Amino acid sequence: MIPHKTIEELINKHSSLEKDLSSSQIDKKLFAEKSKEYSDLNEIVDDAKKYISFDNDKVELEKILIDQNSDEELKKMAQNELNELNSLHEINEKKLKLFLLPKDEADKKNAIIEIRAGTGGLEASLFASDLFKMYEKISNKKKWILELISISKSEAGGLKEVIASIKGTNIYSTLKYESGVHRVQRVPDTETQGRVHTSAATVAVLPEAEEVDLKINENDLRIDVFRAGGPGGQSVNTTDSAVRITHIPTGLSVSQQDEKSQHKNKAKGMKILRARLYELERSRIDQERSQDRKSKIGTGDRSERIRTYNFPQGRVTDHRINLTLHKLEEFLEGEAFDEIVESLSLKAQEESLSKL
Image (cartoon, rainbow, N blue to C red; front, side, top):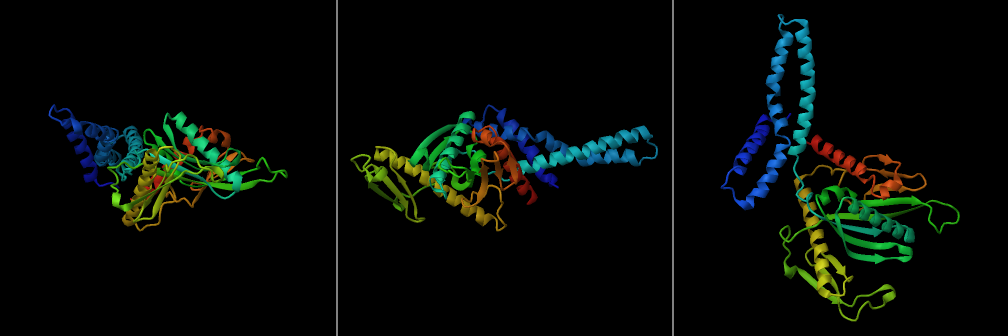
C-alpha cells in the first residue's frame, strides 16, 4: 500500500505546477522543465485522485451490502461496483508505484555502443558485424542518428571491434539491456561437414556523458600521440595523428586513430572515455545505494550471457527472462526487437516493484 501522504503530495505538486505555468511571471528558463514535470504528472493525477477516494467509495458500497433494508437488486449492483472498484484500485496502485520508482537519470541520454568479437575466431567477427548491422537497422527504423566513432575490420567482412554513438529520444533506456555476451549458433560458410559452431560477441551500451555530467581534470590525463597503423603494420598516414588517452586515477585507456586529424581523434577518444568514466561512477553509486543482490535484468555485466541466436532453429532466446522468439530473421532486421525490449523492461519494473 502506498501512503496517502505520498499520493497527496503528487496531487498538490500537479496543482502547484498548473498554477505556475499559467502565471505570466514564470521564468522562461524554468518553463520547459516545469512543463515536462507537469506533463508527466498529468498522466497519473486522475489515478492518484481515485486512489485517495478508494477507501471512502469502498465504505459506501459496503454499507449497502450490509444494510438489511437494501433490496437484492441494489446489493447486486453494489457488489459488481465493488468488484470493479477493487480491480481498478489494483491497477492504479501498480501505475502509481511505477511512477514513484526512482528514475534513472541516464535513461534519456544518447548512448555509445561498443561491439567486440569474442570467442569463435572469424565466425565471431562475422557475428559482430551482423549485430552492428542489426543496430543500424533498428536506428533507421526509429529514426535515430547512428554515427561511427571507430571500426576495426577483419577478413571476409567481419568486425573485430566497432564503436558508435546513437542519438535520439530515450536511447539509453531502450538499449541498456543489450549489454552482455551475445552467442550465435550456426553453420559457418567454411564448414564442410555441416556442423553447428558456437561463437560470441560482447556488447557494451554506455550512456553518453556530457561535460556537465562529469568533470575530468586535465591533470589526470596522459595523452600520447603516435603514427596510425593499418593492417599488417602499414602506416595509414605520415603524421602522428593517432591518440591514446589514459585516465591515470582509474587506468582507463582509449586509443583512437580513425581520423587523419589528431584533434578529431582526441575529441572522439574523449567522448568514449567520458562515457566509460560516467558508467564507472554510476556503478559505484549503485553499489553504495544497495547491498542487495543485483537485478538479473539490465545489470550491464559484459560477461553475462544474455542472448542466443540459433540459426538452424530460427530462434532468438533471451536467457534473463527465458523468452524465445521463433523470429530470428525478423529480429536481425530490427522488426521484432521491441518485443524483447518491452519484456525486459517489464521484468525490470516488476523486480523494482517487489523491493518496494
